[in-house]
Amino acid sequence: MGQPMRHSDFEILAREDFSDVTYSLVIDHPLMARAAQPGQFVIVMSHPEGERIPLTIADFDRAKGTVTLVVQAVGKTTKEMQQTCRVGSRLYGLVGPMGMPSPLGHAKKVVCVGGGLGVAPVYPQARGFKEHGAYVIGVLGFRTKKLIFWEDKFRACCDELILCTDDGSAGMKGFVSDGIKHAIAGHPKIDEVVAIGPPVMMKACAEVTRPHGIKTVVSLNPIMVDGTGMCGGCRVKIGDEVKFACVDGPDFDGHKVDFDDLMMRLRRYAEEEKAAVARWSEQCRMRGDVAAPGMAAASSPATGSFDEDPDPFDEVPGG
Ligand SMILES: Cc1cc2nc3c(=O)[nH]c(=O)nc-3n(C[C@H](O)[C@H](O)[C@H](O)COP(=O)(O)OP(=O)(O)OC[C@H]3O[C@@H](n4cnc5c(N)ncnc54)[C@H](O)[C@@H]3O)c2cc1C
Ligand code: FES
Image 1 (cartoon, helix red, strand yellow):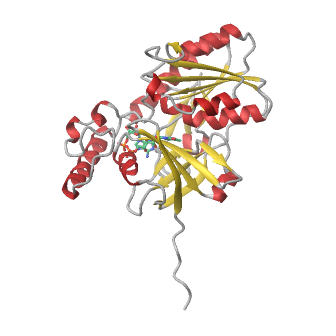
Image 2 (cartoon, protein in one colour; image 1 turned 120 degrees about the vertical axis):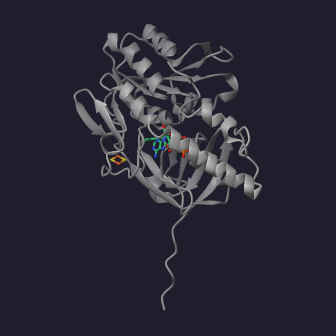
Image 3 (tube, helix red, strand yellow; image 1 turned 180 degrees about the vertical axis):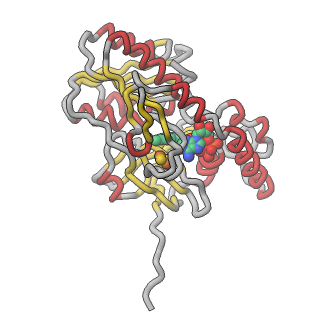
């Protein structure tokens, strides 16, 4: 008799908590690390009954055979992962790399913009542009100083770094759109701006660059199901065309994206998402689990932060 087939799960080698709701996971996956390109994402199942959720490959190390995900706990699955994903535990499924890699070859001077959680997915692009010889200006935006993460990683790959906080507690006071204006004022010839963050932030960034005619790439985060172009769940409107973000993107021309349609579609399952958190929180309460940090209380979901904070990129409120 042969050996029973072993499911290939993926060990979490390191974890860092950046705030009450944001955490990074370094995962052992040499094949994924070898194949990953900036701009791509994975679909994760944390356990056999878990939901499949798309997460951007925020970093990869081909030599160590690791990929890094940065997750914001906004709903049932990401809050559950916040509780269960510990060093030494394993993710049940990790499919990818998915999506089109970001083209990095041609730009000589680029501005890489990340807002809140969007700081993580823009990192591989900033590093990739630098490796391709571009002059890289990083613009990072956070609500406040204590939410800042990966400043050191950006300093290592950016020629200039403009740090923005909404309350002025670090860097310049203002939104990332102000940071882009600052970069444009100092550099008459910018080839490209890459902006990743909440849809409202990416929309504001695209409006800043539009009058200057600067190519602006944004990374879209519609609801995804299969991630392979089969279900149509991730449909986005780009100019006159309909595209599937999972196979045609997630990067698109920010001047053509219909952001209002994207935001409307992201809110489509709000009731079901709220009910899923409520059910899960009740199960946690029955088991006597400790509430994940950032949850007001697992036992009182109606008053939890979820109600106010359903946006997966919501550590900056907007442009
Ligand atoms: C290409 C891509 C890359 C992403 N990268 C990251 C990342 O690096 N880090 C991160 O924290 N989040 C990322 N997201 C968003 C992440 O997938 C959602 O936050 C997650 O699916 C929410 O699941 P939940 O059960 O915790 O919350 P839910 O309560 O189910 O949803 C909370 C909100 O997340 C969005 N969402 C829900 N389900 C999905 C889904 N299947 N696909 C996409 N969005 C969904 C909806 O807007 C919803 O309002 C990415 C999304 C996409 C499409
Ligand atoms: S997620 Fe199904 S088509 Fe893109």
